Each structure stands twice: as structure tokens, then as C-alpha cells.
Amino acid sequence: MINDILEMFSYSFMQRAFIAGLLISLCASLIGVSLVLRRNSMIGDGLSHVGFGAFALASVFGIAPLEFAIPIVIVVSFLILRLNSSNKISGDSMIALISVSALAIGTFVISVTGANTDINSYLFGSIVSINEKDVFVSIVLSLLVLALYIFSYNKIFAITFDEKFARSIGIKTNLYNVIFASLCSIVVVLGMRVMGALLISSLIIFPTLSSMQIFKTFKSVVISSVVISLISFVFGLITSYLEATPTGSTIVLVNLCVFIIFKIISKFILKRS
Image (cartoon, rainbow, N blue to C red; front, side, top):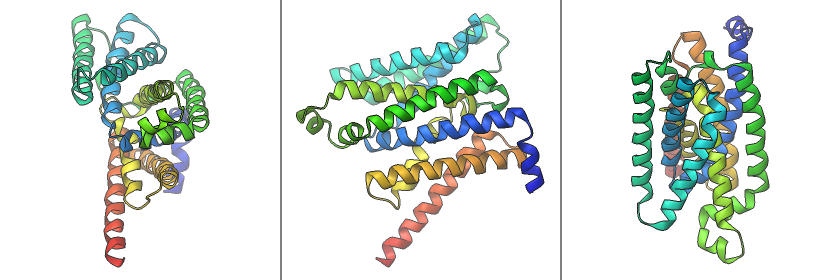
């Protein structure tokens, strides 16, 4: 098995997938903690569908997918925040509306134009499609996400648990909500290369939910989520190569198994206490 794993990393496309996937898993787990605690975890799913529509349009018009999709998804995340604050449309309804519309636009454009595009790679991910430019963009933007998250950690912590209190003590909640929405958008679009539009939200949700079964403080949940996310990605990537299974689906199933294990452990701890 060790020889097989070493052989796996001899392929350049696996090296690119490993580097990009690790960075994306790290960033997604950080963003996921706040999204889950704020009960906004489905925003990631909605934005991923917007990313799919943007990727589809980019492929039809011959535009670089990442550079085209990231600004569009960021703009849509701002739109969701604005409509949420106006209370005219509920957050869940708005996400569902945008999600379905973006999927429809993407599939419609590809079908009508007859573009030579593998729609499954956008929906479920394809590590083979990751090129050197994608890796470079992933590294730069992931480092940006990490830097902004670390710089804004205390503000994100305050807004996560009590936005009204954070506003009352002088925190510019609107500004940091915009920053957080931008970080979420970047992570979602980057992750679509590996996981696809339909599976990327798992990297945001599962590590946090698993961690929360055992750990109770914000800091411990953040740290454990990162560890769980990285280990699950590595194990899922290796398993998918060895067993010739779809990469995105395998990573999701590994995360699901980890969640079940942590759930069982938490039940055991509660019985002991």
C-alpha cells in the first residue's frame, strides 16, 4: 500500500489536487465554524450553485473560470446579506431561490450553446481538471483567507455569537459581515474544482458538526475542525485513488464516517458523566 501511495504522488495532477485540496479544506473548516454556529450553513451550498452557473458561463464564453466566478459569487453573497437585513425575503428562501436559479442558468446555457463542457466535473468535481494556474490561485487566495480570518478572529467570534452586542461595543458588523461573506465565496469557488458544486458544502459543514459533538468552546471547535478536515481530505483522496472511486464523494463519505464516530463517542462520554 505504501508503494501505491508513493506512486500516487508521482503524478503531477495528484500533487496539484493534494496541495489545492489541503488549503481549501483548511479554509473551509475555519469558515464553517461560524456558518454552522450562526445557522447559516446553507449559504455555502447556495453560493456553490452560483459558482456552477458562473463556471458554465465562463466555459461558454471562453473566460478563465476562477477569475470570472469569484467576483460573481462575492457579489451574490453581498446580495444575500442585503436582502437578509431588509427582512423582505427570509434568508432560507433567498438562498433557495438563488441556488435553483443559478443551477438552471448553468445547465440551460451549456445545453443551448452546445458547449464542449463536462457538466459532471462542475457538479461533482474533477481533480484532473486542476492545472498549475488553479493551484497558484488557490495558494494565493487561501493565504489571503487565512490572513483575513486570523486578523478578524476576535471580531468574527463576537459577531458569531451576538451580532447586536458586537455592534453595541463598536465593532463594524456590516464591514466584517462583508469580509466574512467574501471569504466564504472564495472558499466555495476554489473548492468546486475538487468537490464540485453539489458536494463542496460538505467541507464547510461536516468538520464543524463532528467537532461540536465533543468539543464545546469556540477555539477548541475551530482547531479540531481544522484537524478533522485535513485528515478526512487526505484519507479520502488516498482512498479514492487506491479504490478508483470518485474523489469528492469519497471525501464526503469519510467526513460522514468521522461524524458518526464522534457522535458515538459523545454518547459514550455523556453516559460516563
